[in-house]
Length: 116
Length: 115
Image (cartoon, rainbow over all chains, first blue to last red):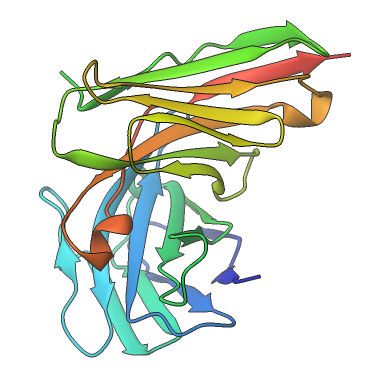
């Protein structure tokens, strides 16, 4: 079945550095991908919608200059957390719509980011 | 008030029990209703997906939607220890294809099924 792959699965970085997270659709083309964030014992919150070939759309309260999203191809979207701070430590999960039908939305396995 | 309310539990049941999980919502624009299962440190896995009010059954899982009451439920029959996970309800409004991806999630209910 359709699979969304996310890399890395976990990353530790120092405050002030930047971290890039990749989200790939493995067997379908995804013109639209979504980035969610999940804090411990809390639900998933949509951060932004990633559109292939155009700018991402950010949800209210999400800093676009801090969370850079690039969707350069139909199978890859990247999220870069710039100048990371400890409060950015979270579980970041991407998802993609399979236009071929079936399950409407597929999620990656997430990236656990820890900023020290 | 949150748009989607879900009791976080935790909920602990014996193997074989029927589990009932529920969510209420306030936004009448929500038209698509989903239940996801999430194991620790993993992404959500879609269990059930419904559009209209009523029941939908898939194996041991039954999803119910009552739009008039803004209330959805997931029932798990003959629960197994492998069902132990966090269960998340999610909803989206009818606004075109990409609306499937703009989901509003409940907080999730932690379920433990003990042998």
